[in-house]
Structure formats: C-alpha cells, structure tokens
Image (cartoon, rainbow, N blue to C red):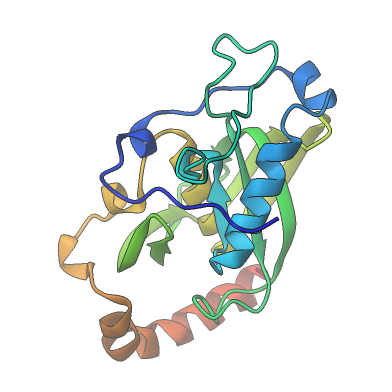
Length: 209
C-alpha cells in the first residue's frame, strides 16, 4: 500500500479532535485499513509517527473507512502509529519499534520537562522548540483491541506527546513558547542542530531512549 496525501496546517480537519473507538469494533478489524494507511504514509514520508487526523483520505480518493459501533461511523478514529528507524529527518533519535495506539491517553509521571526540537509532516519545512514532559505513561489499546500500557522517557516521550496532540486537534506550533525559535529545516541544521546534539546525547544516556 502506498502512502496517502497528508493534511497540512490550515486544513480545518487537523483541528478536529479524533473520536474514541469501541474496543469491540477494533477486535472486529474495523481499523485495519486505517492502520495500514497510517503505517504506509508514515514510512513513505520518513515520519517518526503519524495520526489518523493527518490522513487526507478524500484527496487519496480512498473509499470511506467506517467505524462500526461509533456514534459517528465516518469520524476519524483516535489512533496513531509511531516508529523510528534510520530516519534522515531526525538522525539523532534512537530507534522505536512500530507502535500502534488506539484511544491513547498520556499521563505525565514527572513535572520535569525537556527541550524538544520538533517538526511535523503537516507543517512542512518548519522546526520549533517545545517543552515536553520528560517521563510519561501512555494507556491505550493495541491494534487487536487489547489494553496496552507503556512508559516512555526522553526523546521517545516527546514523539508520543507530539502524536497524541494531533488526536486532540493540536499542532506542535501551538506549544512553541518562544516563536523566535521557529525556523526552516535548513536554518535549524545550520544554527541549532550542532548545539542540540550534545543535549540529546546526555538525554539518551540518562533515559536510554
């Protein structure tokens, strides 16, 4: 399956919260088309993750992906995928095996935050500095509808918080405290990345991810 078009900033659909899915519908396989589309689109675009709200299924001329037993059967499901392999967009990030999260909720486990330079497939060629919780727990369902709980810290925690924001209709630019940090990828790499890498190494050494 090839990747689908990705909604970009300004598309009102990105600001619509996704809808929770009935676990029985997940067990019946209602989300498998959504999940396959997210994984293919994320990998084709070299993303570290993608949320269902970012997929433009209308532009892809895809058939409706209905969700049985939902209050609105055509609603975008509260689901996302995360995966980091050898990613040219974020070469400093440790690997994350493929995660499929349905109905995820994030619980901060510490008030401590860290500086996370973020970009987004829905905000092309832009980076900005976001303060993220350094240690979190995510409670969700997996692609079979089974309960899933995981803890994450450091960069992995930042990636997960970014994707879960999408499901609430938020973009990383909403969380950039100082708009002066917003910059193109070229200027990030020229002016900010060299100083950020030692910080990242210390973070990974501390948390292992």
